[in-house]
View (cartoon, rainbow, N blue to C red):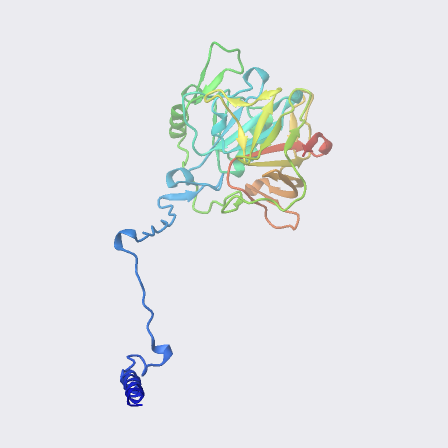
Length: 363
């Protein structure tokens, strides 16, 4: 019995000793416990590099393309150069430098091209051909300096009436701005150079920058934007005439339209690269012969019409309004709002409104 009593005593002593130990945390609320944070070793820490904020210091958005360009380029008046599109000079020199390229029928079903650009360069730009009065009117919309070699009597009247600054190869300024390539047949062998253009502008005393009240011709999306239209436009054929029927194919990789004419790629002979465009505008116009020589005219003085806007493989219907005396032309979407287009180069076909069916859009 003594042995049992001794063992019980030992057990009770051990219990009392355990109860006397103080719990270091027994006087803290659970919410006061501080979690232990284990930081990784310094050499294992992940360094986060901040994304630099995009800045465009010294740049402005081009009024022709909506892209960022240097201020000295974006603020100057563009050049509107009248290119031949005769078959023998079908891959023109320097035409890819045009930010906007217009095409319209002249006499005989042949088309002529007007390339409007703010950064032409080089010693061989052409071949340059004579003015037509509706091209002069288009150049005036952009406050451009119009460059051409010769003119019809209708163009002469239009240039005078609108007061368009121009460099004409058939005037005293001609040999300053232009030269002939004697290895080619006239009249398709006249070429301009940037140096000649600059000297011609200096001699004429033309202003080289836009005035402070100049209004941009287009509204641009800030970023590339797809149309919500369900009308697919992967190939666009502009069937001007038996002589020329250019078409464009859409490339889904770079989202550009590639131009073909005379059943081959349309290239710039200076670069050997095919012409590409981000935007295509088909502007239906009232066009008709004006005399027995089949010279054409387009109603532009105070006119309206319809058309198509095509980009990123889609097409939408649009309308347009032009007031020639105010140097004003605008496009509108189906809701009547001013059309917004994608940044990039634009091709515009001035196409007869009585031949809408000759614009073929394939998917």
